Image 1 (cartoon, helix red, strand yellow):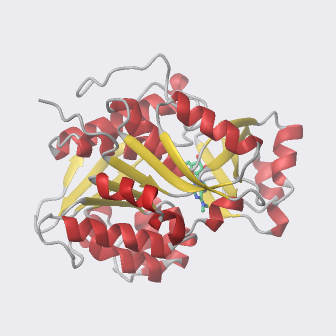
Image 2 (image 1 turned 90 degrees about the horizontal axis):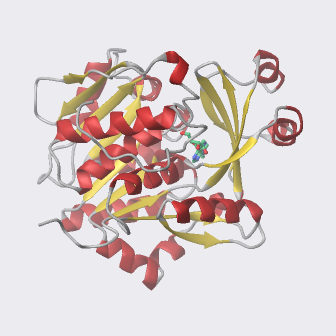
Length: 348
Ligand code: 26A
């Protein structure tokens, strides 16, 4: 019989509102942005948000990588399965985020800072690339105090799977470590995404502190490459990198670590701790004309994967669920999922 327990998945990271527009080379160049990247905004980037809204017909779409993942997992799982935490303001942008999450059936428990605006992420789409510039705002003020508040900690203790977006390593590593250690102590599942190349590059130390606690680690090809380079793995081969990630020392020996590397339309690479063979799972490509944009595709993959993990499905099914949800999201504007809801059907 299916479990009736609620909020089995708890996700932590940065709630952001995406200000997303179709842009061009000139816009990328003006702000010194790469076509496919994610960075933290510096002073010189701040005018881009107004520019996107005024000159590029930008849309306001709920974002924040792990919040997209949490909505994605809830899309598949029974009602009241997922809770998301992070820092937000008390403003129009936060209201948009709350409304979208509410419609998706995702419970959010924000640490609200009424004096600081909700974080925003400028997303410039060019072709199949997306460039993201994030001004974290209130998301940057998430703290351990919120996580340890009795009502929030009760949600932590109740959940069985934790998903942390690696972007949160720029915000509150102590909160991440608290979840990581709780997972290991109670033999729960701790999942971390590498989030963006700049995380393994510039937040190496806090990332490495979390590594022994990863039951699953997820990244795409650029994040894996950045990890390999910053950690001197001496290889650019994705299978080798996956193997290295899977076999790092582990705090909870009761679970073998799984490392998953997505690679656009190339097969998804999966290594399991202690296993010699690295598996590849082909991606079913969707016709080019059906692609809207790839913003949030990786988050959707993680959402499908998390849903499978929560349901206790075999690894191959979890990967398939991730690929399925990514396909749905790519057809939508930004990190969104189609309504009316589609039902997951294996390997189609
Ligand atoms: C700390 N940074 C840079 C970020 C982000 C982020 N989410 C959390 N923290 N930078 C971009 N994103 C989100 O990534 C999603 C696509 O994967 C965007 O909000 C976007 O929805």
